[in-house]
Amino acid sequence: MLDSSNQKYPPLPLIQTWIWMMTQSGNPEIQEKGQSNLIASFGSLAKANEYLMEQNQ
Image (cartoon, rainbow, N blue to C red; front, side):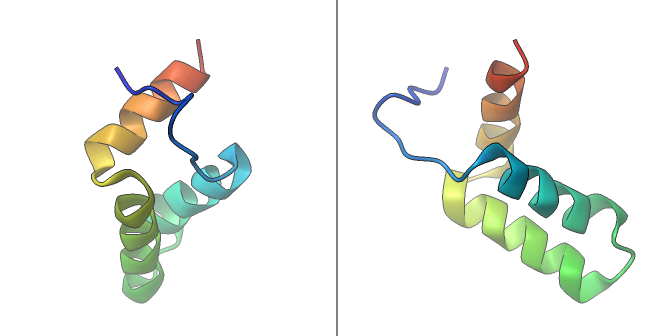
């Protein structure tokens, strides 16, 4: 479980934009940028997914 009290993550709408870029943009450069932004912010896509799951509870 991520301890979001100690870690500052980007605002949820920005994270959702990066996910859209990665999954639905249709442009390989934009997809790569969305993925790299998520990894830079969370360390891995798995941690980004875990954070989103916590936010949706």
